[in-house]
Length: 64
Picture 1 (cartoon, rainbow, N blue to C red):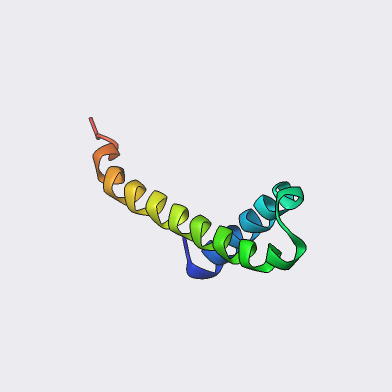
Picture 2 (picture 1 turned 90 degrees about the vertical axis):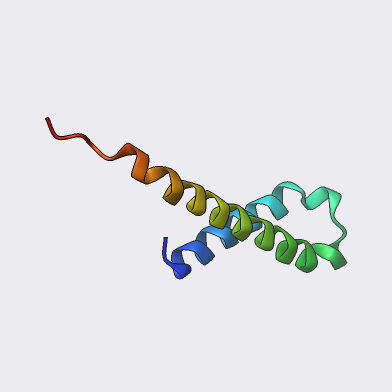
């Protein structure tokens, strides 16, 4: 995944998480919460991509 797509996806996920948790987060802390959620989402996407890249070679189609 390219960095722009990774950023857009992580940001959309972070905004959605903040919206879901909105009633639990004080108004003053919402920006900090968005940044924290964003960092977690980016880390999750990067971890997924690393695992995907490690597993992908195992699933090469066999030509018969």
